[in-house]
Image 1 (tube, helix red, strand yellow):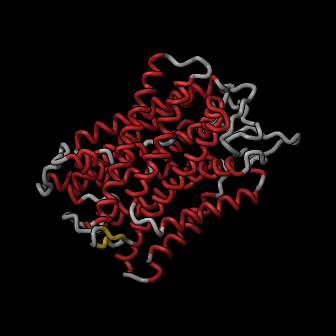
Image 2: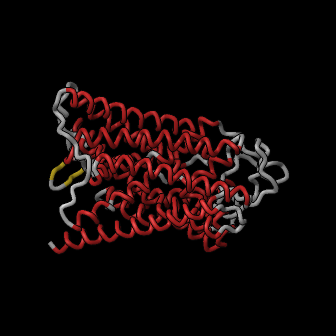
Length: 458
């Protein structure tokens, strides 16, 4: 029920692998007659790829075109590829130390390296990161369906465009209905693999978004109606240099899936498949990210908003522009609705582990399962109605909890190396990851604070 350390007697490559301890990170499907948990049905390779890809491709993709506006196309593309390789390296380290320590959860391997303090710190970071990410999901869904305002300009939502402004097309009511009708039922699943079909659909919808955006950009490019995009950043002063680092938390958040790797691994029929699953998912998501960043920024240029979906409320200068606008926005809003339960699954398990570390598994306590789920959904719903911009949320979670989960914690356990398995290359890479993570995100936090102070002063 939590991400605490579990050391099963053996982890075979088949369905017989044990994930049966009372602190196991997944929610078993049934109980045997003697009170032990029955084994999981083996999850398929495609299902695992879709689930992990769904964990990766979330709301962060909507801010990637804005990072191109900050960094320029060439450095922006290079940074996406670099972060994909760093994410793969950190997950590989995480899996390797989990195997040797016989841990079946991220918290387990953190506990193996740093004791209960490490496990609890990881749980806190997962809770902070996932709450922040899911608030962003709700903000985007609200932007798409009910509209948003930026720099004094109102961008109409889909429902506003169809039916006009009414109380029932407002953000509060739309998000309330979405929470009760969509999120609550999907959040009731107790196993990650139960979401494989919704995950496949969500990935397909993300691809639909990319294909349509690319198609529109190519048509306008052939028509000569798109100006030359900014290939490199413009740096007129020192403040502009600090501003470049604000793109880092967004890129960090875009590749965070580490908290779900063990959950997916534990449900696999063959545990040796987890590494190719991670590589396949990262390759797929990087392709989607690069295409979205390139064509999104190409299409809107310097008018690109922090949430690029909000740009799809104007005439795109092509036939059936209104239809394409609605298809793009609705398809990605549905995608986020389907991604939501994957992130919520890890959030609920980690919060339960923090609050009830010695309680019985969450799957066997329907009351506790329901109370935690309702409380989390309520907090996320209320926060999404008061936080104005997804960029603000990304800056906070990406520069704090997300960077710890994705890079600092795996690197720290490698440097500590409790089992003596890390090579010199592993430790050098870990030092580089920690230095880059601390410096870049520290500067990003400073730049954001500086901008906020100047805005308030003005």
